[in-house]
Image (cartoon, rainbow, N blue to C red; front, side, top):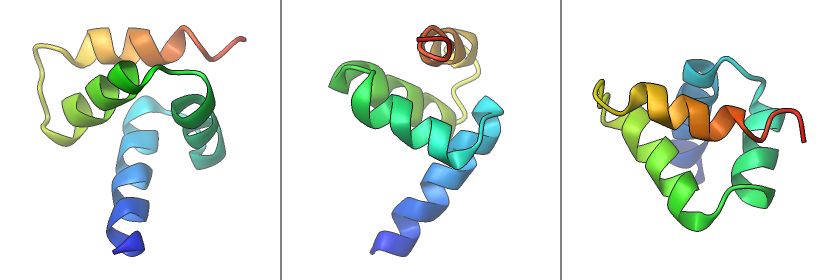
Length: 64
């Protein structure tokens, strides 16, 4: 099952425009569980209404 999660992580990282390592670091160590779920599910579900907010939520951790 790990392969499926790896593929999902790659899709989300590409959608956010960051390397996989950066994506994993932010999702696992900086985001709250609620933020991580929101970001991932918004991108996986292709929720255009929340896409900008999900990217903003993720990007606020890029320069920490």
